[in-house]
Image (cartoon, rainbow, N blue to C red; front, side, top):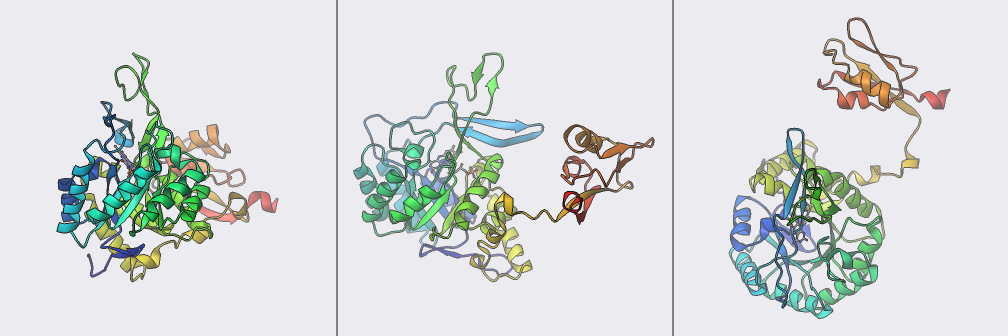
Length: 409
Ligand SMILES: Cc1cc2nc3c(=O)[nH]c(=O)nc-3n(C[C@H](O)[C@H](O)[C@H](O)COP(=O)(O)O)c2cc1C
């Protein structure tokens, strides 16, 4: 609690002390890791996905990660080829039980995935409830699962999603959340299928199937695992717009009545506020923790508290979904006005970037004077604002709003 604000939220009848949770992944793979996260302020943990012990043991390729760097910015995205937990089932449930015993007021979610039979889901759901988990998350979305009917393969089939949700739900009395894959054109039918199967909540997104690069000398895609690679789960900053899109798609549809847990590229309190405004009630994080550690929750806690106070909200719940009504179809956007770029010559350093982007990618509305200062031809500018977006000087290019050139022509 910061600035006297209570950040707790009721999610499916479970009280989360704050909406910030570890998402199911290596950041929440053992008792010690989750305990440290709780101690540092995380309100909930979605534990690494647990399956049953099968004859073919789960092992992970190495290296299992490959980053996408951009210029000096490290890890704008992260590709992984990891599957579900490689630890014995029993060890994971012992850890879950210990976590609930020692942290009774934190929210504990067991992520499960049956590998071969529907009955696996039943067994795992019972084990999760017996261990004291507050909720279950069904992993219908890991893109690395290759067995038919598992992970994203299950998650792309509405009938399978409904059936496995219903089996899980019938096997336990705790709330069940279905975690969706973003590797589909439309998540809604799948979320509605989970709801029909009895799901109490939907979480999204799991990772986006992708390839982050190729080693140019060996012609091997990355990560290079013994000379080969696979397209696999991509996460981090790069996927935040995709996560926001799917969360808002679901929040906008009135047929879906269950709450949402949002994730994908959450690093800062601003990312948290965006997900909450677009309809998520709890938030989950992995890649930012891989990059910066559990301490990032302090910024989230402080930033969200300040935001609530500054915007007159008395609880997190009050702000959930406030931006949803402002998301419309592209053809519903107003064409009544348009922007015109305004360049502040007192701030301009004469680099010419705005001229280049306008000449080669927009309206050819910017010309350069002899003193290198750019001038905007207001009749030609169509207000894409790419010049503003690439200008290296803060607030050097702003814009004014005028009647739309085409509407008034
Ligand atoms: C290395 C790694 C392993 C993951 N393992 C799991 C998993 O076992 N179960 C699961 O539901 N999601 C898994 N995820 C997906 C994350 O929980 C999360 O959905 C995704 O990474 C997007 O969030 P982020 O951008 O904050 O990382 C994994 C992600 C990474 C990077």
